[in-house]
Image (cartoon, rainbow, N blue to C red):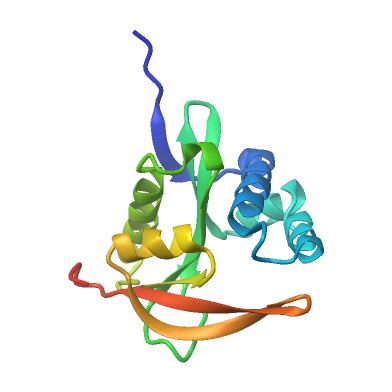
Length: 173
């Protein structure tokens, strides 16, 4: 019987190529048909291995979910960037390769990022998702996130609605 190790750990610079590939695959799957094609490719191409290597080396909080030797997903997180929202931490990105979605790995990655933020004193948490990204919206709702704000973002000529989901620091949403 063979077993595969599944772990969430802090990303290392050597993980940068695998994170970049995971970013490419997951973004194409999540946003194809939502973000206009040329704009989506531009956004994906900005985040190659060198970008991820630099972010990790500069101390960005990037966690990966490793499935054996493969990077199945990643989360990028830190302090809340939206001054108008009174939450301490923010998960900037949480993505899984399409073949690893629906298996509970997203929950595992979310819990690890939230735990790391809490350990750093960032008790409450916010995540933004495009409203048209139904799988993300369903995911954050299933995790107990409450919709607390709305905004919009321009992608080329298209303006898309986004929603902020939040969790309080007491574990009770």
